[in-house]
Amino acid sequence: MSFNNQQYDRLKWIVLIFLPAFAGLVGGLGNLYGVANVDLYVTTVNLLTAFFGALLQVSSRHYHDETNG
Image 1 (spheres, rainbow, N blue to C red):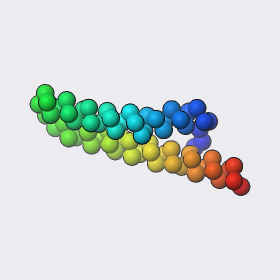
Image 2: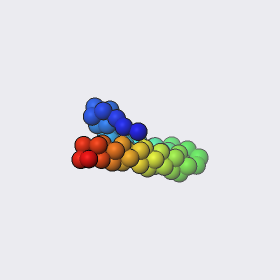
Image 3: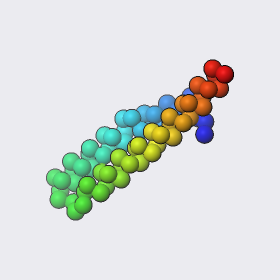
Image 4: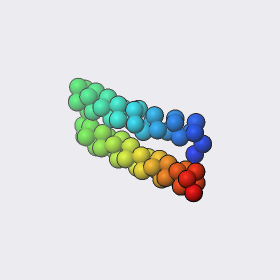
């Protein structure tokens, strides 16, 4: 899987900045308002973040292999 530079930069921002901040927001507001099982929602967001981060790493590896090889 390979992305162009603009797609990669947007996805990288989402994975590195937005999703972790969103997980913190969900956890904080969930605890504040007494949402049941808020830890399940936070864990789900964090697992998705890890998954998308792995996909970005694969894309980055393919890009560097193509440009260096």
